[in-house]
Image (cartoon, rainbow, N blue to C red; front, side):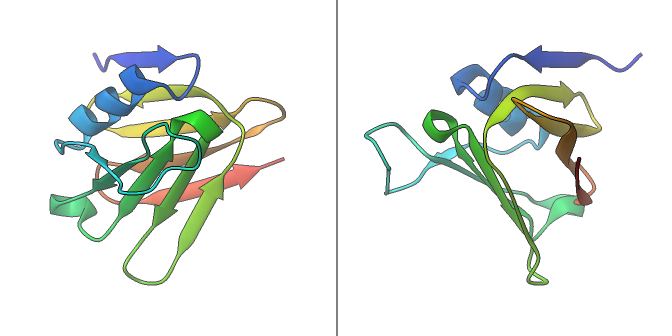
Length: 111
């Protein structure tokens, strides 16, 4: 059975769980909007070329891929980390999601 970890917000614990999902260490970026860390995950393997930038203090996630696609979700609320499958970011208000799968597939649906 697949285990899901749910975090009520994009916090340090969620960042490290996301890193574990993608088997990569979250790297602290050299910039910050407010003195709090910004983390980058560079996916490898099936997700090679996908980068995830996590801004916990801004409740924001940026995802980009090498084929010039980008997704941004602001006002991130709950975060679900589904072991071996994907991470799902949900907005704090309204409906929708942004997910990044371990195979590198990214999808965003709002509304």
